[in-house]
Length: 328
Image 1 (cartoon, rainbow, N blue to C red):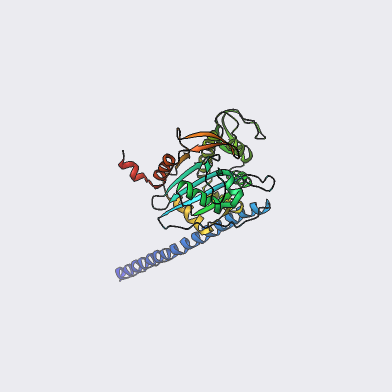
Image 2 (cartoon, rainbow, N blue to C red):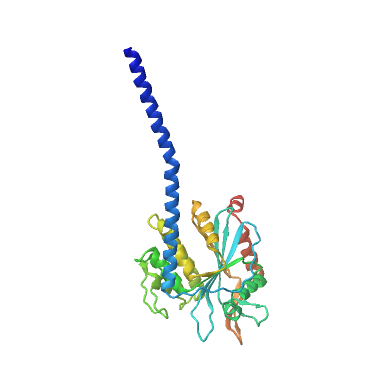
């Protein structure tokens, strides 16, 4: 009888333990669901907080005519433009870049086009490439790039300088770590000293725009790529990962782009999945593939060896890490 009672108690205890295990297992999906819901809400409200920053600055979203089409090759070519402030109703592009994201390889590439490159402009007289935007906006610039370089851009993003300063301040109010290569002050409304330091949005933008030295625009393009790399590295630090939705919202609130929020999310998520966050860069023109030329209507311009530069440009955008490995 005693053994039966002990067996009964043991059976009930075992049954109770099983019930507890089942209950715990049943709670796991609920906990996961709550975490997912909380994450979605956090991302949404952080993103909206970034959008609000742009609204507070009085930024107006504009829609540009643009006829770029996705060729569905797994790569996205994006025309990135840094729009200069308007002068006498005209606005030129201080920065002209082609960014490419490869969804298959998860590679990000960045090509800088010197603003003084002399190009054929559809429907207009040949002129510097930085004047194209003021003549016909992003659509004319898309056509010009296709005609002169043979590259089809599928999306565009026009960034104003307030956007850059706001993004930097959201990432870190104390500034972005950068190694200033030399003392700078000419025509940048600030004074920068050589050496490693943190620069806030306004000073970092001045560093990226400086070109009043012997290198001119070539040095500026190199510093622009340096600044982009520094901002990217700081944004992806452990302490700033949780700020990414707000950073993205701040950028989207200031940027006029053909890309949807969904496309931006998809690209950002794909890039973050990749372990290596390096960005490959190229500058056009390459060394020894151009000459300076004086023109009566456009002043001093860069006369490009298009055949050599276009071959390098296409090889750069069409190659993959696997191709590079096979060539070694």
